[in-house]
Length: 152
Image (cartoon, rainbow, N blue to C red):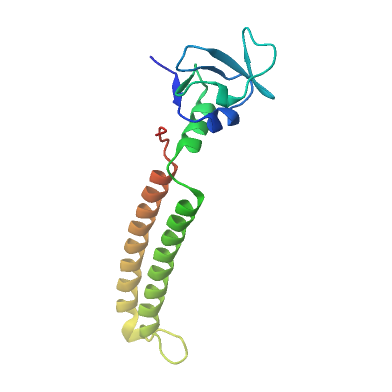
């Protein structure tokens, strides 16, 4: 089983944790140190830009694989925030519509008359189903946004 992970950007190499071993497209191997990469034959640590892309991260732990996926994701912060705002707007619209529908059954004292209790119960059940379905959609969208993605 291949546990190596490709990296296509020196900027991502720079974010890897210390101790990470990489092998670049030319076969050079380096180990991430605090101020660069230690490479056999070089006296000083080398910058991530020195390596030929794509570089392979050799045997990364799951946390490093997730970090690489996050840093390689096509989602930028503005795109992610726009999607989260869209999710919140959808939920707010659903809640406001449901409250409006329930409000139509209330009398002037904000009570539900006995003759409308059956309608109230039916509407509440419908709202519960809609809310459960909406929560499922939100969880699906959040799962898509946070799933591990391979880099470009």
